[in-house]
Length: 134
Image (cartoon, rainbow, N blue to C red; front, side, top):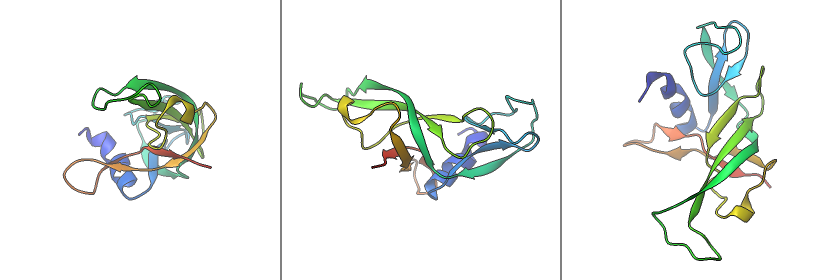
């Protein structure tokens, strides 16, 4: 695990959506990087966001681990979510909307909320995935 990602994954396991925020100009950024894209500063802190966002884009990928039918294809989504509560250019995260199972379930503009999915040997790390908001 890259140390720069650890804080985000631990926060997700605790039910929070933390992204980097530049200590110099205040811009939020994802994915975690050593330097700010806006001002170049290497000073940053973790910032907790509301955990909600909007689907900006998505793609459906064939899931070769499941058997599908014409009515229910075996696919999963990879979504780009614009995060709410950020400053600077919109912070967007590449993730999965866990309760969107077919192409009819997901649309650009849909609102989503954090739904962490654990990984690893313990319960202290999670991927920041999302679920649909009604």
